Picture 1: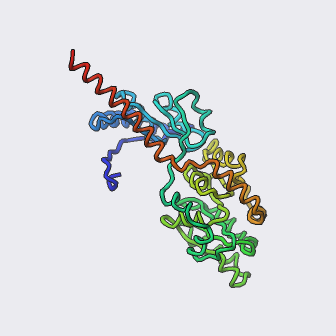
Picture 2: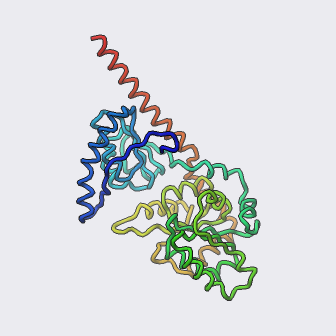
Picture 3: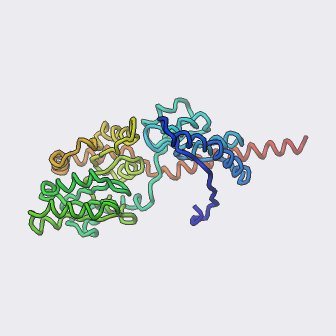
Length: 343
């Protein structure tokens, strides 16, 4: 935030868990402290509106907004709301959601679907052909490309299964695997062992990288099919680019995971196939990938279904809604000040 020219302040906040533990107790204990800090910050900054997008820091910020009489706009990124958003939703003036499936969690007229903001680099990729982008990344332009990513930290089981599946995948497609920095060396060794009996030309169809940041939009656009987790940001990018996918939701630590609900939503619309992490096996993965990339009709229908979730103007529409709330509050505040001056 400071590098972008925004004033920045920090408050204490604790993660709110749905089960009893020492971390839960300390997390709850931090809420009043964080709220007191947030109240002080808001009195100093005098905001016209408060915007939160989930996470445990949203609770003290939302409560402080209510105490200061500042309108609150809350954004819901995943399909199901987390505990923080459930707690502050009644305090919100407006609730924006990324996906229509979330509207049922927030009955009433104050919730509307606006989508999740997507990086401009992703939006720009809609003007580039996958074939051209594949060539730029060092792949054959006309051969299907499977992009594999487990998120910024990687996913050990996902990496292992993909490596074991390489002998079955590479005769049919190219593979770009993003392992995660911490898992790169072990994934490289596993891939090398798995491809030991393949000829040189076939092995060239595989590329392994530890991490992608600026190159990620190009990798997504170059892909024919994406194998990945089902976080809200990832699905929003897949939707904007109309990318067919195989989703492997992050297993929940306890209870259910937002990623499971996100994946099920894409699965119901036939925008993706869903495989549970514990159920994923090399043979299953090979069969699923080949069945999708071998059918242009299937790829087209999955792409169309993914695009049905796209909200490319999400950032602008969310910003416009926040500004609308802020301007109304500013006008109301000015009116009260004017009336008070005339008494």
